Amino acid sequence: MSNLKSSRIEGLHKMPPEARLRAVAQQADLKEEYVDVLSAAASGQITLADRLVENAISSMAIPIGIATNMIVDGQEMLVPMATEESSVIAAVCNSAKRCRSTGGFKTSTSGPIMAAQIQLVGATDPENVRLKVLERFDEIKEICDTVDPLLLKFGGGFRDLDIRVIDTAEGPMTIVHIIVDTRDAMGANAVNSMAEALAPRLEEWTKARSILRILTNLADRRVVRARAVWLLDEIGGEQVRDDMLSAYYFADADPYRAATHNKGIMNGVSAVVLATGNDTRAIEAGAHAYTARDGWYRSMSRWEKDADGNLVGILEMPMAVGLIGGATKIHPTAQANLNILGVKTADALARIIVSVGLAQNFGAMRALATTGIQKGHMALHAQNVALMVGATGPEIDQVANELKSIGKVRQDIAEEILARIRSEK
Image (cartoon, rainbow, N blue to C red):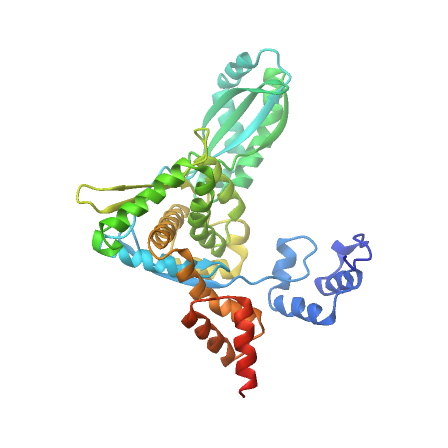
């Protein structure tokens, strides 16, 4: 049972972070060692954390590693990835190395186009409402562009309308999509502000009532595509290629497999998104929704063999990331990682992220089709297990190496090894 006295802490949001931590510790009956851990974890970051989130008491560091061997559209890339999962970065490095001979990853994009939805309800003539709105196109453009003149200055702004009438449990609704070019911003703030400015005018013109006015994370107009070719010699021969294709066919036909297949892709995608201060939840929601857009959940990626028998991988997904606004612009670690990447536009960043997702997918599929996922993953996980059982200093490598040598990376065995090492001292 929890030792919590009460979740009601009067004025917590007004306290400085240090006092806030003390108040939480008192209510939760937190041991002093945990208070020290939280205090140390926030060292140098607590002021920023307090600006970014409400009721901040600490900060949690995620390891950042570098994916090597990446070539994207002819450019050599070092890619920062923020993840706590063993083998993710190693898989990208290995996969990218195996397609360097064919030029690495080639990409294309549909551009930085985002949409916001305005929900109109209560009309007895929803189709008529749709046409009334379309007739006001020029006025709508002026309203939206007036909201964000800076976006307009940089070549962005309102582009189009897409209006649908949908059937719901409470009857038909008219849904107005405003289509906006957000340039190097992710665009949530811009399109949300436009939707909120436009909604009252839509009510005036149509006599319908607006309720929700917010962007959609199904950014199907902001799609990035990446492809790569792996030679048979780099894969391990025809049998490995065919087994990898079989794994893809399985994922594309079965949502149970697709969920894990796609999680592997997102291991790579989300790690770069997080490292650059972008919104991992928005990207993940959009990716999974896009995958199921035809009515069933399937593989995000596509795999086939070319005329020479080589393996071809293709990944096409929404990628609404930005270089300006939010944590991307104000978090010093995100800025440092963007400098490692050397990207100057959101478009360039998006291309890299999708390429990493494809590399991650190749690595997972090849491992599954050959040695199995656990051999490589657990070998890299051995140090984590050593740490879990309390190994310190040189003990960590000793325990990890012995776990790997016997081929069993388990906590109980690690405990026995550590006990023996310490008894021999």
